[in-house]
Amino acid sequence: MSLARQFNTRPLYQQVADEFISRIVTGTWVPGQPIENEADIARSLGISLGTARKAFDILVDLKLLDRQQGKGTVVSDPEFGRAGHRFSNICDRPGRRISGEITIIDPRIETPSPRTAELLEINVRTPILAFGRIRSHEGRVFMTEAVQFRVDSSVHAMTPAELEAVARRRWVGSDLAVRKRETVTVGTCDAEAAATLKISEGTPVLRLQRVILSYQERPLEVRDAVCYLGDNLHYAC
Image (cartoon, rainbow, N blue to C red; front, top):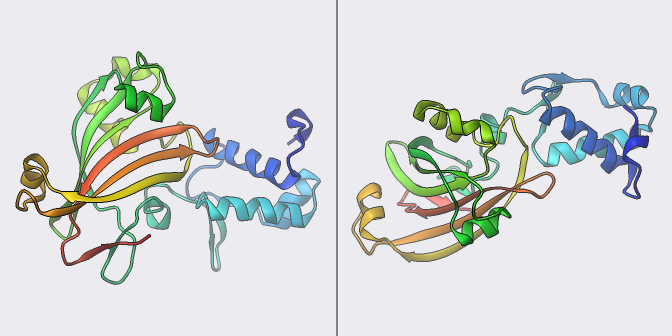
């Protein structure tokens, strides 16, 4: 790797972290792949061990790499394990973060509302993928969501089944989501959400508004959700 092509005033360890992230985005590093140890990486890049370690720490903090006892460092799989729940603040009784069993509803290509276009930082004429998402845990639906996110032009030729596959995969394979902005308010459940959650209309619920951001701070997904925690889940700030 030559860092000269990305000459800037940012600390070298951040430039190295950017290079590692680029390897994941492009598929050079794939989920589950063991990564050379920090000393070997440092030698191969001609940088200090401390710089390599700081770059690794950034990716571990973003849950893009996973340090495993006895196995070294591997590329995280964003669909499984701790990485799979990294954007969820919903926890079960023992305090484990959960994302639930997911059902996708009516994936379709449409143009965004002005609010969605602003949140995704796109033009109102730019097509997006929109769909509903229902999350269940231990046989109970606890969240219903309206989701919109960025897609590329290839989706226009896709079948409904292929669109559903994209909705399940989301930004995996095309970008790396590393953090979220989420606003939580308390409200009451309307009739439509109550029917899905199997609770009475007017029951107190959480309303979650979320934007998922890439490592380059690009908005990838907008979500508006209604969540009923019941007596077996809680929201962890």
